[in-house]
Amino acid sequence: MEISDDEARELLKGHRRTIDNLDAALVHILAERFRCTQQVGRLKAMHSMPPSDPEREEQQIRRLRKLAADAGLDPVFAEKFLRFVVSEVIRHHERIADELFH
Image (cartoon, rainbow, N blue to C red; front, side):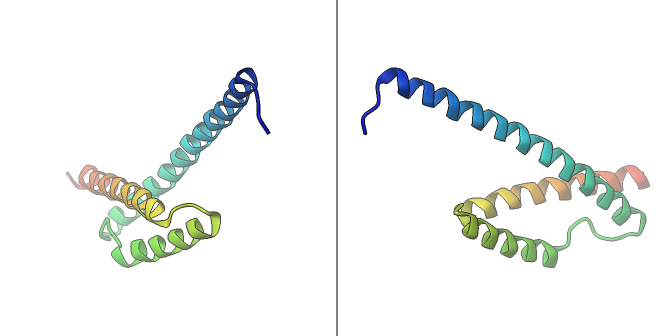
């Protein structure tokens, strides 16, 4: 089925509105995730736990790769994304520990 250029432009606008809404939701979800991980970082620092837990991180990566595959998302992309998020979380945990003890 062929559509006109005007119809294509309207469809594009609709897709972009959806993308904008999804981007906003992602930002809010990430903000909530980081609020929670900040509390984890404080708890770890107060109890002299290391900022990183490689076993849990690998477990989470396996879990996320499966979720991604089940959702039709590239598991490699999902892993890269999670590794980036985890590296930021660890950086925040290190900063929290430094602030508590220095």
